[in-house]
Image (tube, rainbow, N blue to C red):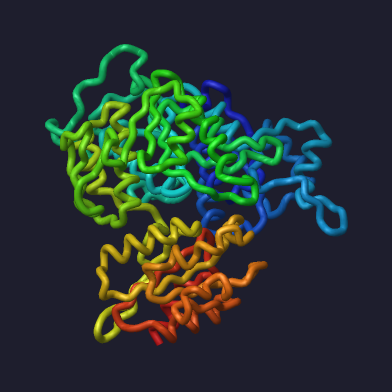
Length: 502
């Protein structure tokens, strides 16, 4: 049994909404810590169901009230659960109603994580509208490469680790310990000071810090529960239109995050974002390190795939890696600046990034189809916000040059995009694509009208099969087809590859 479980005693937790990325990661952490874990969700299916069952976690389909008979020590409630009623007046989540009626113990996922995993650790939280998963993965890998054995919880699967969550070392680890690929001595940071106040005297935990609300009974952003000592604020713009009225409301939540960082902590902020400046000007009680702008503490010189890292205008590292796009260059600077707070030298961090394998579903190649004159490559990417669509496509355009054709295939699936709040930004977000194909199924707004400024470069289809037919009809040798969605996209990647191979 790990230190975490032995401190508080092993318990039985039953997780409502266990198949979500965050709650599934929490389940894995709890199981690793020695707790008994069960859970329920709708649509319990692979791959998450297989991953959880492999950990010995019992899964139940649906939210039936008879699960009250499990009598766990605690029900952990995901933010998918609500007090919503069906059209006939029956509750959509009868188990939650039964929990409330019985007076059983319940809490939110972030609250349980804070009390049973994060307590006593140096938490490094990665916040921002975009790039959270990638930057969290970068930072975790830098610390691992440096031998610091961090725990982490990521909203995706970092390919360097193959899992989305782990507890890491329960005790502080000396920099450069041989638990990971050990760097040459010249690249290691100087020995850490021995005073107990030093940030690396606690075991490290890196967490993707989401601004979405915690639970139906706790409308604060998830990240206020994490109490980080190192906090990255990577970027900030309007999103989550289903819970936030405007950008100012989101900025207030980000300032609540800054309020939780101690005086000895570090806030790592994107120096290019006016919205982040406004958040900081509301009050800051910790050390600030900026990145990205010409006057920032950490900045880059060179192309996104091959660039020098400057700290206080002195070159301290060089990153050469397989990733593309200015957004990933900024993500790298943020991770380097955060790792520096716990004693990892930028040169060592840069070397680690040279071996960074990215995250599953971040411009991941789904497959290629051989064609005379050039193979057709199909990519899977998690982008869903207009800015994310644009940065993904701009990064690819920068990599392949002006001659290669890009076909953007996307579905407006997030709550914000389904509401149509940002539909007017879609033509702007797709400027780097030669052709764009939109799945309009389930939308209450007219995608054809929204994409009209693109003229014949944009096509819309109401079903996945129709979308596949239109893309495959337009595809040519040498094309790059980027499928972008924050969901499974109806298995379009495999369907496209099959259609293109005919």
